[in-house]
Length: 80
Image (cartoon, rainbow, N blue to C red):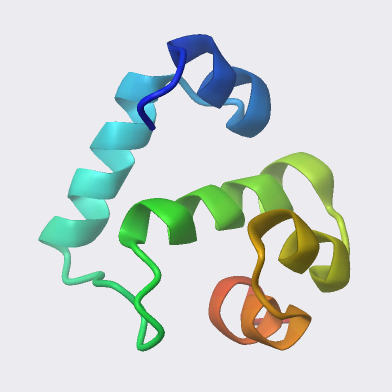
């Protein structure tokens, strides 16, 4: 979030401004940190990266974001 603004566009295919608007919208609608303390921003990033960009398995995404595959499946993919 604090890095170069082009990085988020490259990694998640949304601009930094759009990402911030999505976070604000989620928070305004009651979306909060997970029970495991994962921020709304990280949850959104993982969702976008997994569902909209890569289509990688929960094992690969878990490795990328340093969460267990079970946590990725349970908290971010919901339907997997």
